[in-house]
Image 1 (cartoon, rainbow, N blue to C red):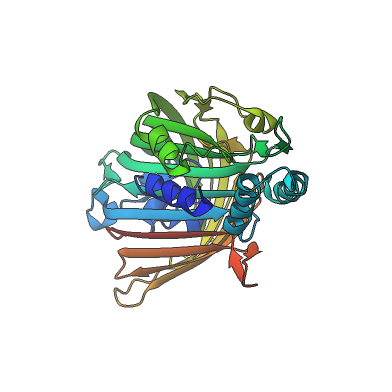
Image 2 (tube, rainbow, N blue to C red; image 1 turned 45 degrees about the horizontal axis):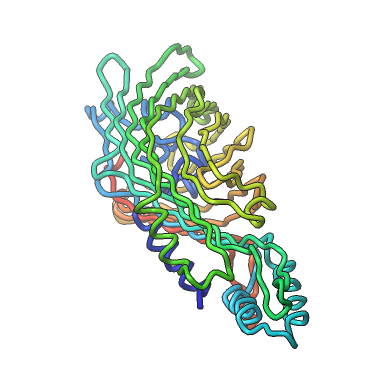
Length: 415
């Protein structure tokens, strides 16, 4: 018997290969918002103008670079408790139906599907910067080059509910209700340039551009709940290893920052050219048609504009940062994202006192999940961030669990 636990394990093994960083900030950026912060190197990956700020030439420095990570892992689930038990009950009702109980079993199975079908999913993501990335070099002519490389991936499993009906002889049940798995992995290499464009006594205008080369592999699998001949775990593995479709494309990002003594404002336009990538195919059925899932699929990195602002003390020890995506976009598995985020951080100049940051972010569309996050920086280089969703589900024991979680760890050079 196929169980959702096996299905979830298959998703986990798929996701650990690498989570699309396009729609979910990585490292300390998850806590700090998209506003650049010179004390946190991962914030240079947002606004293409930000790398200009990350090298302090007053200290005769020309380079700044990551050392290891950040390695980030995220988990998100639907608003359904004890999903494993409920799916197992549906399978038992279908497998054990006969002429005397078919109608009762059908009605009970449909009741369960009506309750959980639209909100049953598990999403796992992971991302990792290539060691020593990003690498930023600032020239004496006030231009900054950045080279960035990362591996990332996302895996999502959903339960697609379709009506359970009696078969033609009225002694058994059948349904198109299915497990639906989607995976996407991305090898991304970015090259950016930023420089001071104009300045006066009140501040400086910085502009930046970045080109990101993406090699994306996408896989999909659809397994019917009443199909005893196919194991869900095998079908998902096959979709990743055998049926995945790979393609490459380049996304262009533009950014600008106005920097003053104690504040900055910025704007980023990501994927201004909206690159398109090939998707995998599936054999659709009534369940996938009900959820508007097509037999063939493509992924478009849609253009998204983000505005950000921050106020800080003179030495940037204390910073209040804000960012807001002005429009929603879909990620590689079709989920919508439009982040609004706020953070407060303290980074001291001592190697022995840890830096600390707290943040709040909410997805304004799609799941509309909100997260509270906490981050610490040790010895000015080791960064650890943890976030939990504020929305909860109740498990079979009556305990409340957060619907999502995020963890990141990385080590990089200090400002």
